[in-house]
Image (cartoon, rainbow, N blue to C red; front, side, top):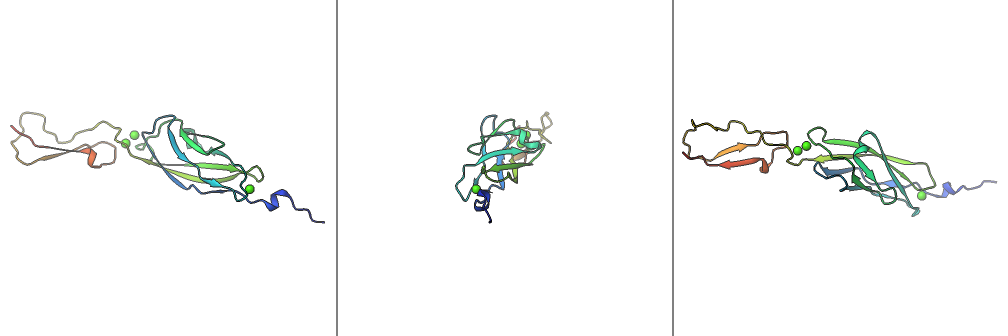
Length: 150
Ligand SMILES: [Ca+2]
Ligand SMILES: [Ca+2]
Ligand SMILES: [Ca+2]
């Protein structure tokens, strides 16, 4: 006689999270992202993370909320991947690779190029755009427009 096991009638949970954005200036202890997972049977899930970059994060095993454990640096690495592990208490662990896109913050001091600091500044009437040339991505916040006078 065939006996149905509990696992036979029970479905495996699914992990919906695939890519998340985290700004590089998120402080330690701050919310990073939420692991979105669901179980068709409504089984309570436990959450975990593994992988070399998982050391940046700390996950609440009951809620799937992930917080910062150590800060990120977009200039060093702008795309991390971790393995998210979810378990419904019935089946073996379900794992999925989740990618973390590290968003830029202007966290490097500016390095000005071609800025005429000496007295040989020619008199110019047109505005000069000073580009903040550092390792951060260049956006409007990195540009300073000044009008040089005698
Ligand atoms: Ca289940
Ligand atoms: Ca940085
Ligand atoms: Ca930056």
